[in-house]
Image (cartoon, rainbow, N blue to C red; front, side, top):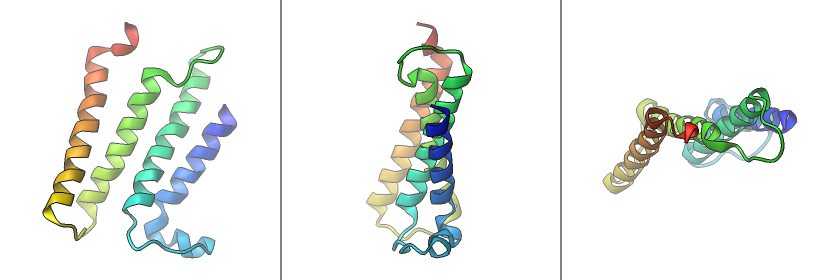
Length: 122
């Protein structure tokens, strides 16, 4: 699982660096928009952190990531999209911007709600 986590972390970082010339450095085509590679990078980063987190918590057997991993993935994915919305000049119709902001708010609220409810202790 640790190897899987490291691979996900590495892929996530590569995708998060796509807007900074990583695609051309690697010799792969650059997308028209870096939104999707960055969001996927944030989610992969969250999955990688979650996998490593699970190996360190002493869980044995096949469990899946559990609520802690889900919270980490929510924060990484929504945080990446939030950063992208705040730090780039995105040219989308208003309905697209409203949708992306809605996704950020809902996913962050779900993560915060899970933390506040301490849902892993149920």
